[in-house]
Every structure is written in structure tokens, then in C-alpha cells.
Image (cartoon, rainbow, N blue to C red; front, top):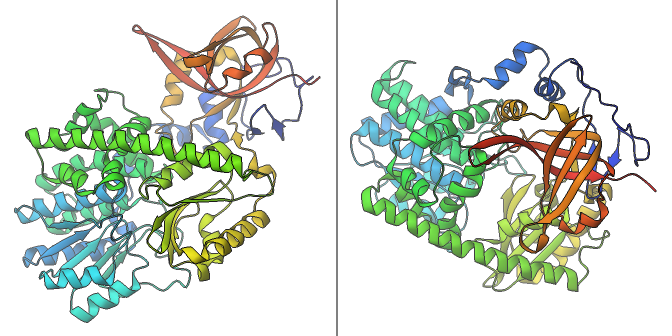
Length: 590
């Protein structure tokens, strides 16, 4: 049956299908798709998967489709150096980062090298976020050389560490860099034994996280050690056991869940509930993770925050130990400690966000003429300002930079909106900064406090010129128009197969036109949310609209609305049904 998309038409509603506005967002119309296809087929066709074979391949990816290590620039060369060093019984040190990506990347290489050496595993060094900051520095290289380290391999950092590489050469220490971050503006690379980076030879096939890069190096290591593309059973077990850990770091670092990243995330999530890893089992037990049917949200809002909490509130070594060698009661104790640190992080985050919002309101900083917000407060927790900035971006739809005090300097994080590269903005302010680095959407920076006002003026001027007024209104991209009759439990289950959802593979959004309001009630604490039942041509469905309780009086029974929503599965007392989670609503004009 071909769906009827003309319910209510657009008569009486503001806008056209090429550009509509709802109550809270701009609507981006879906690309044209074949109306003869079912809902999932239309969603996938609008995302560029044309033809039945392309759609079926996307929905059912296999591990055989995972890109080989030889396709990642530098991976084979780095793996050969590691194999040679392990066989020669050289002292190896893994230099990681203090976030979930860097910690999981460190764990992946640790377990592979430990399996090969038959010993406890190599040394792993995670810098202290507060005392040392991000990345590998010459002082660290000097320390490792004094400790008799022969080879250092970085994970999730190092691509800009030119000075550290010079120091390693000077001291006769071999350095391998594996990273995925943006190159230096002058495109100078560290001079070292090997560099592994997805973009080293041009546009990468997959924009791996640091852990994805590390996993490819570990895979190449296993092949070289086994002298075969078919690795031996011991290494096969390590690679399979590390896949869920790689999925955690990949999802946590918010890289695009496309191509190999999606394969890693999809299969890693499937394997996670039964993983043979005591540390992860302890974490999942601590936060009561379901024993089956995990999705990316269980990582993003469950597992990853615990791992990240260590580096944000204390030292990442707690999380690293849990993923490398703790077991039994020690593992359970470490997981409980991470949970407690995460609770502290949540409270700290709430306090900082409340302060920041008050600061914005009192100083009228969210005026449309101010298209980048720069906030600082002496006592803000440096390990938490990044996630606070991200939350404010979601609320205010403009780039946010949040800074805390560090002696004579301000140190902090920046987050941005789609269409504006915060890293490019920082490039333009380079003369005012002591250090900076990151991606288009997120970056870290340090500046002397006497440069603050000048920096605020410069970055705001750049953002004001680059960001249009329309960009200050959040947008929602529609994948397909649908009838209510199509929103079945079967459709909801099929849509779930498009996941895991995240950056680059967002949860599909459908537009329903001309739906009738059967009832609308506020729900939740203080009536903060809405429960709405809609009908259309004999079909009806329950919808929820989070954080929009104040809209209840604008949605009278019998009224017609257009809406954009995601299709979800509601489970209650063993019964499963489809449900719409509303993103925005359009009311009739006049």
C-alpha cells in the first residue's frame, strides 16, 4: 500500500516543505524517496542507500566488512615496530589520554601486547588532567627515558607533539604516534618512528576514534605475530574481547557512526552483555545495565560517564586499572568508586550549569548579536566545563567556551554548533592563546588571563561574521513523511536496526501531517512533560514531548497539528508498543 501523505495538506500551516518552522525548531525537509517503499526503505533511500541490496547490506553489516589494518595509514608499520620490540623484550610504554576514548585505546593495546609477551603487560601512562593537561610533552619523554623505556606508543594523542618527538630523537627513545585529532595548522608532523592516523594520506574511509585506530594497530600486530592474515586463537580471543571496549570508546568520543565505526559499535554492543571481561562486568553490574538488547544510549549515558568520571574528578588510572588488570572484589570496588565519582560529577555539572545560565541571563549574553558565549569563573571544575559547555550549546544553539582558573591562566573547553568550526575560530585567535587543539565541534584551550577580554572580542567577532541568524535556531532534519498507520511495533523494530544511533547516523525522524489531538496532558514532576494521543484516518498512537509541559494549553483537543518525531518502542509490563517521541510541533496559522 502506498501511504497517503496529504492528510490535512499544509493548508493553514506556516511554511513550505522546502523550509518549515515549528514551535521550537527549523525543519529541514526530507530528500525525495520512492513512495512505494516501506517506511524504513524511504528513510534509508533519503540517506543515500539506493537499491534493495545497498539497504539490506547497511541493515545487516558483518565483521567481514570491517576495514583491514592495511587500509589505515601507518598501522602495519607501527605494528611491525611493536612486534619487533616485544620479541626483543624492549621496555614499552603506552601513553594514553584521560577520557573514555584514550582509556579504552590504552586497554586495547595493553591486552594485545600482554597476550603476545606472556607477561603482565606494558607500562601505561595517563597524564593528570589538572597537573599535566592533554597530550605528550618533552618533559614526559625525559622522564620515560630516565626510567629506561625503549619505546613509547601514544594513543588518542600526539599528532601535534613536534617538540616531544624532537626530545625522543635526542634521547634515543623510539616514538610511535597513533591519533585521530586535527593536524597542526602549519601541517608540521612529528618526526618519529611511525605515525598512524586516518587522514595521513588524504580523506579517510572511516573517521576512527583513538580506540578505533588502536584496534587496527592491535589487529595488524596479531597478523604480523601470527605470520598470517588468519590470527592464532589467542589473538583472535583478544580481538573479539576488545571489540566491546572499542565500541565503548567509539561511541563515547562521538565520532561518526558510519562505515567501520558503525560495524564496531553494532557488533561491540551485541557482544557487550556477555563479554569475558571482569572490569566491564563490574561496571555494568554497578549501574544495572540490561543483560541484553543494548544500544548506544547505554554507553553514552551509562558506561562511558563512569569511565570519564575518573579523569574528570580524580585520576584516570582508576578506570584504566579496571579495564586492564583488576578482578574480583578489587574490580567491584573500583566500579563503585567510579560510580561515586560520577555522582559527584553530576552534582558539580548541575551547579556549574546553573551558575552559567544565571551569568548569561544577568548579562544578556544570549542576545542574537552575540553568537559565541565565552564564560569564566575562577572555581569551576576544569574536568567538567567541557560537558557543561556541550549542554549549553544544546540549550542556546550557539558555540560556548567555558574557562576555569589555573594560576595565571584560564583553561577550558569549547563546544560548537553544526556549520561553525570552533577550531577554525581558535585558529584565528592563535596569537592570543598559549595552547589549543581539537575538532570542528569541540576543542580545548589555554590562555593567559590578561588576554581574556581581547580573546572574547576576537572569537565573538569571528563567530558573528561566520554564523547566520538562522543558525541560532536549532534545526531538525526529517528523513521521511509518514502516516500514523505506518508507525507500528514492527516498523519501530525495523527502524532500530538502522542503529546504533549517534553522530553521522542520527535517530530517524519522521514528519506526520494533519494529525488530530485526541487528548493532551501534562505529566511528570511539576507537569514538565506532555503525554499526547493523536489520531489519523482510524489509526491512533501515544506520543511524549519531553520538557514541553508549558505547551499544554496550546494543544487543544480536536486540533490539527504537523509534527516531527522519532519512532520508539514503549515497554510496559511485558507489552511492547510503538510510540512517537515528539521533537517539534507546528500549529495552524491564525
